[in-house]
Image (cartoon, rainbow, N blue to C red; front, side, top):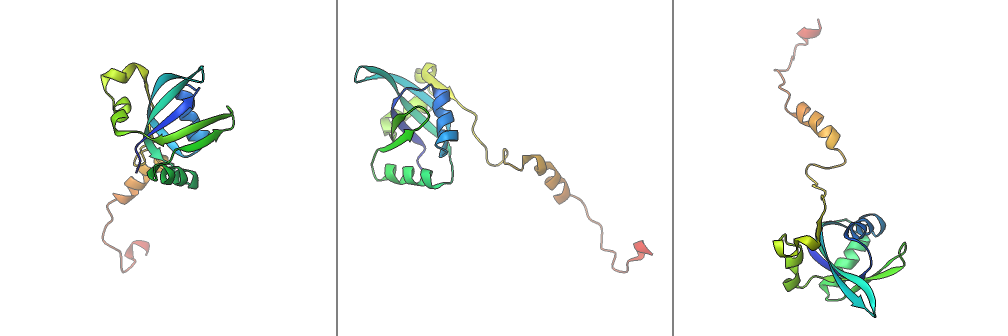
Length: 148
């Protein structure tokens, strides 16, 4: 699975990029984003290096992953901001931007990621399930004497 992506020509903050990826485009949860400033045609933009926390199981994510594995850049239209994002797989040399080193810490934003083992939609029921699963059950009452 692709664990790092790069988005060129972004005008948003790291928090907004994470929100757009999660809520608008709905194909991944970012765990870390490092923004570097750049000028594109005389306009101030960012290049975003993103460490993927989790891909969402959907067609959009599948299509983006497939295009990147084929070595292609993927263009995604962000309707709310009327922007085109160029998404590509992060080059091996650029993975250092999001791997937690001190050199890029001041440009990096970390996000809480979904831990599918503990933060599931059913987390509130997990204690009950564990309690039920660990209940000690006595020997069966085959003659139903407890009910007589």
